[in-house]
Structures are given as structure tokens and as C-alpha cells.
Length: 445
Image 1 (cartoon, one colour):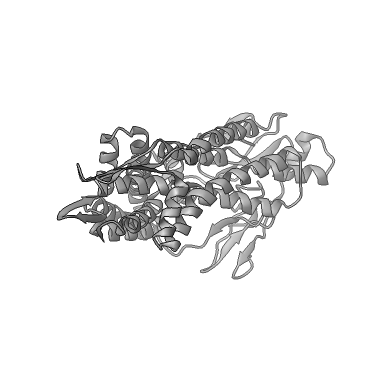
Image 2: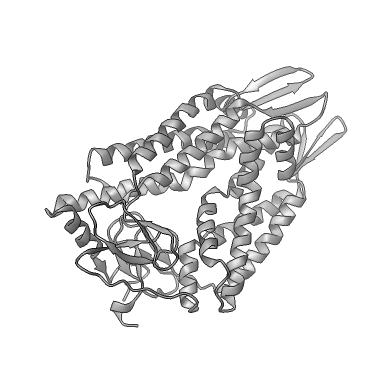
């Protein structure tokens, strides 16, 4: 394939357009403008990915069929799986917490694996999967909300917390969740964009090379990654449809500042009760007590588990606060039309995206404690109002990060470099198609 007929790819962070090259083993293509990873080399075939997905689904079944831990108090033994924890939390009347953890820990990961199997099976045989376009949209929506690794860490924290009160031992489910985390991390490489590229490789979907005209700009589809020419009208938020998957395509996210501020302010409002109200309530023969997030950290520290206390403090206190402050900084610097430190700001945004789901740790810890310490008349642990508020903070901050459009900040850099009318300026930036990209290992040809 000649260089000018190679497929194009858009950097999701700065909107630079590149020609996609074949990489050698160990290579990773990075954006020359903002440094973000564009694509990686993978030696796995579609059949390999299918085998990984099938194995992950089997492990998922084992992980949820067996208890993750058991607790023994005065001859009574209580075992708990993830589904047990969700069921007990629901029975205690904490429906919001049960729904959030049930979706993030069970329903959505299962649905993610099902979608992967649905598309990998036919693709590995050289056929287009039925409903491929809809399946890819669904997969893109599911990926940020699947929190199996967070649940695994929650089990470890819960076991340490209870170890000082009674005999606690890990179960088969804990090991299975550990393996499942490894497999899901590997399968996390299969984003919708990657699967669309695999579909291009096996020839079941067309490769569209856009023709660049004087009255058009290049934009990438957020679902399939297809770079296409759209009219260069005065409104960068105008709605178009992808030429390949028919998803809605915007040159830039509409009203992203207003939407991000709204979600962020709502998260700040819920952040107050999340830290003030108890996330966990304990009833025992010795009396009743309530614990806030910071109270739980102090308790772990006093028990001598300073390492676990540090993990909980980072995940449940430092991470949410960091996300809020980082998003506020990103919003303000864009509103101030700042073009300084764009690369560090890109790294900051990537960090916010990466740590988004880990704040759910304390919520998973609470439901597991409720399931393991469910001894009627002797001890009972239940979620508090703070747990629901904390879960809402996690969801709102993740939605805020998804709503923010970092490409707008890079657009401002272009405006400061060239004095052109808005439409012509966007046209010049969008048509800046680069052949070389920086690659770890060796230069791309």
C-alpha cells in the first residue's frame, strides 16, 4: 500500500492526524505532538484473543461461584462471594450501593466478556460479526465501568480489617479473581478502535481514506476511529455521522465546559457527605459504632496495618481529591486560554482517566465486610449513607473526565501560532497529516 493510501488515525488527546504504519515487535507509536500512545504492536492473533476471552469467562464463573473469603467467630463460619455481598447489601436496604457494586463488579464485566466473545468468534473466522457496529458502541461504553481489579483490592483490605477481630481465611474465589484481573488487563488492550483495525485487517469492513478538500476538516470517530472529512462549517460542535459505523461524529465535544463544570460541582457537593457521613455501621454485643472513611484509615493504622491504611488513604481520600483538583485546573487553564504546559496537562488528564475507578475501593470493602460479618445477634456490619454518596462521587468524576475535551486546549495552541479565520485555521490543523511518528524501539518508516 502506498504511503498516501495508508489508513489514518487521530490522536484522541490533541487531534493530530497520522498515517498508520505497521510496527515491529516491541514498538509503540506515540503522538509527536502531545506524546500520547497512538497504537501498540501486538503479536497476538484473533484466535489468541478469542482463547483469552473464553478463558477469562470460565475464570469469571469460578470467581463468582466460590467464596472469596471466610470468617469464623465462636464456632460460626460465614463465607462470602461477590454475589453474596451484593445480596446482603440489598437485603439491608442499601439499594444504591448494591446496584453500583453489582453493576461494576458483576453485570458490566460479564457483559464486556460476552461482547468480546460475540465479535472475536466471527472475526477469527474471517466473518463480520452480526451487529458489529452496535457491539462496538456497547463495548466502548462498558470498558471504563468494569472494576474487577478494584474489587480484588477491596477483598484484600476487608480481610486485613477483619483479621484483628476473628479468624479470616481467603477462598478459592479470591485466587480466581486474581487470575481474572490479569486476563481482563490483557483483554483491556482490545478497545473498539483496535477491534475495528482487526476487522480491517481480515477484510470484513472497508478502509476509508478520506479525500481532503478545501471546505472540509478531518475528524476521527470516537467509536470506530475512522478518520473522515466533514464540512468545515462555522460550528465545530455540529453533528455528523460516521461514514463507516454511522455513530454521531462531532469535530469537538459540544458544550464540554458547561457539562464538565456541572458534573464536577455535583461531585463536590456529594464529596462532603461522602466524607462526613459514616460509610460503615457496626452492630455487635459490645455496642454500635459508625466509621467514616478517614476513621477506617486511622483504625487500620492503629491495628498496625500501615501499608493497607496507606492504600485505602490513597484510593479513598487522595485519589478523589486529586481528581477534583486536577479537573478544576484543566477547566480553568482552558477558560483562561492558556497554551503553556500542554504536554504536562495531557499527562495530568491521562492520570485522571486512569485513576478514575479506584476510588470505588471503600464501597467494595464495605459490602464485603457486611457479607463476612453477617452473624445475627452477634455482629452485623452494614453500609452507611456515606458509602452511597462516595459511589456517586466516583461516578460523577468519571463522567466529568469523559465530558472534558482536551483537544480544545491544543486548538488554542494552534490559534496562538497562526492568525487565520476560525474555519481556515481548523482546516489547516486537521489537514496536517504526518507520516512519521515517534516510536519506542525504532523509527517508523
